Image (tube, rainbow, N blue to C red; front, top):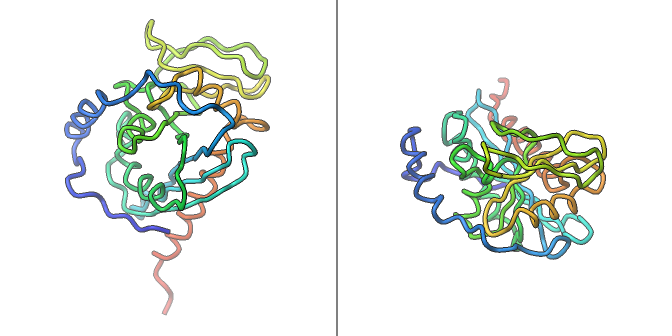
Amino acid sequence: MTTVSIPAGWPATEEEARAVQDELRAEVVLDQPGPPPGTGYVTGVDVAYDDERDVVAAAAVVLDAAGLDVVAEATAVGRISFPYVPGLLAFREIPTVLAALDALPCPPGLVVCDGYGLAHPRRFGLASHLGVLTGLPTVGVAKNPFVFTYDDPEAARGSSSPLLAGDEEVGRALRTRAGVKPVFVSVGHRIGLDGACAHTLALTPRFRLPETTRRADRLCREALQEATIRQRPTSA
């Protein structure tokens, strides 16, 4: 497990964070197809918090895209680097997520985030932010539609409908299990929306959420528990 410090010069106010988003958003690449689904490596990242103890834990889990077997995993813990502000959650997560990715013994390939990419009020969610900083292709797969609207997709697995900000399509509501609530897929960086949805379906052979997210969620919660146990005072 890697221990992370808050980076020097990290935004401390909402205004500073939004200025960073404005600067980096121009670097998002939306005209690349991304890697073919079911090939190479695909990595899930996720975080867990203990706000009371000021601890955040991140996990990165690399899967072989063909069989969804775990290839490698890494965790990182640190202090929470930004207050909770909707639309600026990436600033709470990025330092530890980057540290977890850096600790992997192999290239991560495509990175799948438990959150948003283009489907973000400023069109620059965690998946886009992480993609620009790392240069990796990234996808956001979220559990809810945030502030956007959609028509319910047909009940069959693989059905989808546009996720809309007014008339702008910022992602898709994608049915990964027949008759089960959809997930919300958006492009992060260096991949198209069709490819992002195809990867999401390839990663959900049995459950609503991608295997990358499920495994990273479990691992970051274990890392957080371990970190908070170490912080607890021992009895005399």
